[in-house]
Image (cartoon, rainbow over all chains, first blue to last red; front, side, top):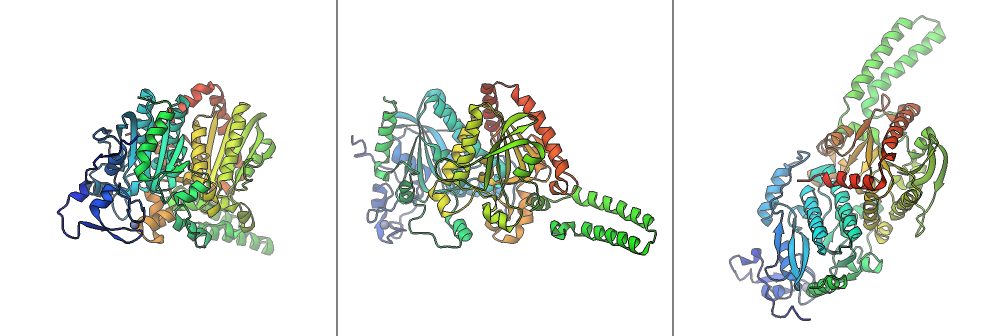
Length: 282
Length: 316
Ligand SMILES: [Zn+2]
């Protein structure tokens, strides 16, 4: 089962910039080694020296787990209606525009049909670069629509979380997306449609405390930070330093909160294998 | 009880003191001050009306957090008979920040589940300021499943700053515990009435907040984040909590407009803590009405309606 061999990964949009001598190299945030960029890309955006898993865009994620060109995005045009007309020092609408400029997306999640090793699935992928991957009405709605499609088509639903939590700028409407997405998982569960949740760096707050922790199988990426409360909030509350490795994927595994930690290079393989286990063969 | 008063209530307190003084003078000196008293009392009524009908979102937040605000146990004793508190999640422990139990409301059994803040420092330390740990949410779920099994309606009371952010809470799966409650409550086959009675603090509040009918007290608040945290994150200074409270649309009236709550219950003048009996009676009447309606709906249909209700929120 080596459907990974020879599958070429296209460089991400952000990497297509003019190649300067500086642009050819990247510094690993973990081991601080200077590494040839192409080498990182070939290695699924994982540091070849220390196995640090770089944060990746939703598009890169899809390229890594889905069969080439198999992803068909749904509901790409959903835009927040700014339900509470929010503004702090800036207007929420301006923050949305900035997120769009930065990521080319209208909100923090891509959802659509895809194939993994030929198996039809629905993928929902967060993009942390869009307002910290926060979940507001659009993210919640896309997830639920995706789950509803999975329900009617009896296709497995797979999510990749990377989020700071509920989106403050949509107030109570964001909070309610937690209930809305969790209720949709319940409907999948009752219908026997598999839901696999992949937690990537970082996953926090209202995303952890809703659909993301409700997968039939929960997978985490190595060293991903995952929790309910953010480490800074905890530190301020208990007035203590947090222990080494706190809220890392390995910590969650040790405490029984996730099923397994899977390296990015093995992710596609593992997802396909699990989907087959649940009876979704080709 | 001067410590009962919030800053914006000071003019009321001053006037009350003046009336009290005048009363004493009249008893001691035997002077007739009835005319003066009548005038001041009228002024006091007017002042109260002015202050309490024009509360800002931040002032409501302070009222919602008032230390003397009635809590779940007060409501149980004000409205219900025969209360059996039930303890523990059968897995790890018993969380005093959440109260669960069985009681009778006008003779009919109900399951009650709610946050429990303290009214003073000692109680607050005991109850962890009403901030539950995962075992609190798991206890709540256990009692709700128990209620479903015996076809007993559930009444939940929301009053928490939020789920506790601590090392143990994370180790034992705070996120999973909240998520599991959302999942299970969404399809619980018994009526669930949610009462936002005080402070609705984010996911820690919602974890017992998925229901068929959501009532909120006039001065209660419910928000995705506290105004203080919102201020320090978005304005990058802690002093903008008042602005954040306004921007977050977290008052009962805002939430009704957004379709998140069904009904606002009036509080006694000055807030629920000024008249426990009146507040208890108002809430009891509303609960009886709501439960009568919900009891008529077959469980399957109840669940379908509940799912539909949450499905619609923020549908683009
Ligand atoms: Zn490295």
